[in-house]
Image (cartoon, rainbow, N blue to C red; front, side):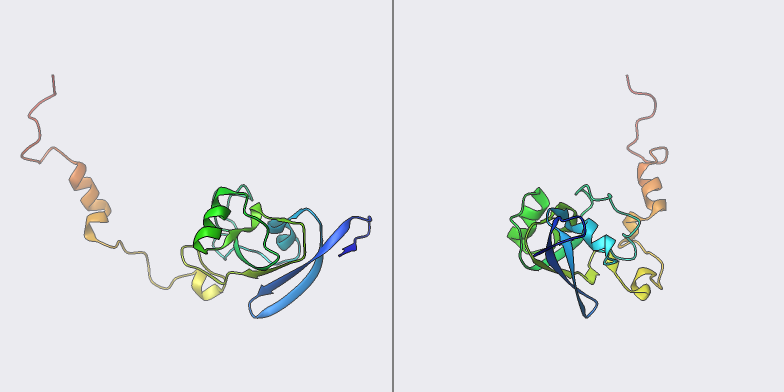
Length: 154
């Protein structure tokens, strides 16, 4: 622990990202997400760097793994993450003590950090024909259904 230029107390933050380790001091009581972003260590993937909730704890895209110095979970998502072992939301963590975090490289839903993973080579295809736009239109169109009522309901 040390002090920054204005005399505020600081703690060491260690970040494991893309095979490298970075260490720096952050102000005690600082939000982890903001501290990471200020130092150029985004908790987001290529896709979610612009598609996120801005640190309100509702999109779950800023997840990180706490390796050492893990604070008690206070946010509902972090309590679930603690219980089930998935990443904690960096936007809901306050850095009070020295901490070591691991930036998650492959977020299964939101993609990875590399340029090859952020731009898929194959277009999106529905999992099943029943999810296609044409089938939804046909399923909701009652004009050709035999069991559709003949006129307006009374």
